[in-house]
Image (cartoon, rainbow, N blue to C red):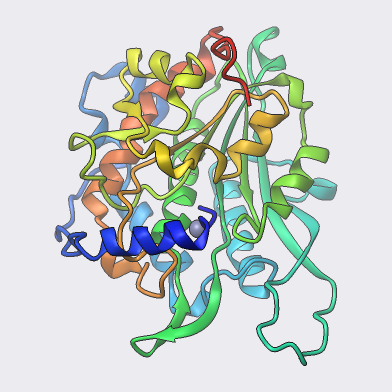
Length: 347
Ligand SMILES: [Zn+2]
């Protein structure tokens, strides 16, 4: 999630002083299920995500070993390589540059704090892009984009002796959602084509996303909808438990329709934060794609701090949140429902 102006950050910090940071512990053992099982049963969605897979992804992506996945760094490339390997395992085809999962895009490194530092050499950022080809003759021409951003802030100023900005919630948690959806969808034959995209350099202005817009494996016009996943690693106390929110909910009929299909999705309870405009969905929305971000960011104190780490993740919530999106997304990739902007609400 991109940063807000300083004044608002200061207010956010004051509010966040009151935020509860103690997290629920415990793990919930759940079995891995396939698309066929999801479709065939009425079991609770939260029983469907694979808690062990989620924990494994998080423990790698948000580890100190990955150094905070700084935008345009080697650490970001390692994260991208891991994600690509996982997509391969799930039967998702490569859809990046030259038959690979990766897209290599020009990027800026973070501005050097030291004015006398030599200018940084040309940096590159990496997206991961995979494709699950639709099975229906007509509907396969339409695509659903499931996305998250894989970078975070890297290393920086130490806080309480910790200088690694792990980005567990922001946005390793969203990457896990996309990987879990890839795992489940990879066992199915969706009617529509599904594109999985994990963007680099979201935190430094969206260079990865900008490259994707020009090098998408399908035309932008064929995207029926984009769901970006951002910061779902902890519950938001502003909404009911077991609930996620959708940025720009009132702007299109996608959120309400997903809710009708069982998604526990409500409107973003923090409209003053302009979250609709603060993630990679926005650039897509500006190009006409119905694009929203799914989140449960409760304005916690660990936002963009070294303490946004595994210790502050609520894995029970995260597993529940991801699982709750399986059925609605499975419906979306198999339906002929085409969401529309509400008149006057297209950005
Ligand atoms: Zn962020």
